[in-house]
Image 1 (cartoon, rainbow, N blue to C red):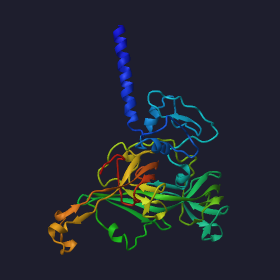
Image 2 (image 1 turned 180 degrees about the horizontal axis):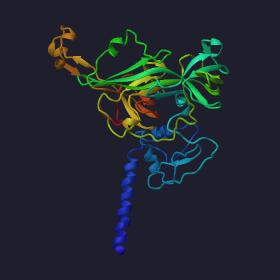
Image 3 (image 1 turned 90 degrees about the vertical axis):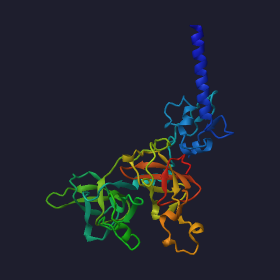
Image 4 (image 1 turned 135 degrees about the vertical axis):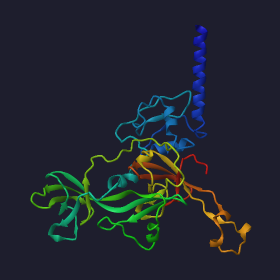
Length: 381
């Protein structure tokens, strides 16, 4: 019996040692035994400082089993980075907010003011403004149609600005579109995208969602009653409101930043997960820019999911084999060379909708651009 207990103790120690070395293999060389959390840190910041792969935050948590809730780590806390001789965490002051996955200051405007919905046709909308004005500002009254509400209820006034769509094709590749919307929420086609939008898909098309920009919030002061429109008094802060803006109920807490960086649950079919848009109507972005992705909750994407973005490799004619004097359009696809994809950046999802999600660019060696492919953060090509 004593021999059996001794064997079990040796085996347990061996397993602990193996686990410790597995964890240590992910840490950068020369790291200290402890780290004191500082104001402004995020889980990604700490992971990137001490881990070879910042999305492996649970490795640090594994080295600190005394941390019961890793979401409740505060500035001043001392985190152990040792493997076998762990240093007990020392609590800091609890006067500040705990750490989050991404820097709140960078994403808060997008958390508060942007959201994606599947459809806008059934939403109530602004049908008129007091004294028949064209625009309304804080403290003024607007009249809204389709609101079945009582006085005192709170509503957010939002404006449809972008429609995301997906063409599912079999012959070549899927197409993703970002269409601007007019005041009614209808697409505004221009010469740059008219023919692209006219392409007939092989398998079908799908609306991924409508992006809504919050303009203002307000309180119902008078129900519709015998009229067709209810009265909404706008709060003192906010953007201008115009006819055609939609209404949605105010969400008391529409987002949650308490999540861990982690790889996606599964690899997507090539061409299915892409960068849809970059914030502020740009075509490319850098560190801490916000981007929209073509995948969401239905695809298994949740807050904290980390992707690597890749520039899709070009398909170029083989001019050495087929002649340098030939026009590129005359060279068949079989005589072209597909170049490798090029790594650009790592991005982390911080807000998820059904078919679309928002992510923050965490690091990179190239700009993150619309149309880049999303892959596992460890992808080699």
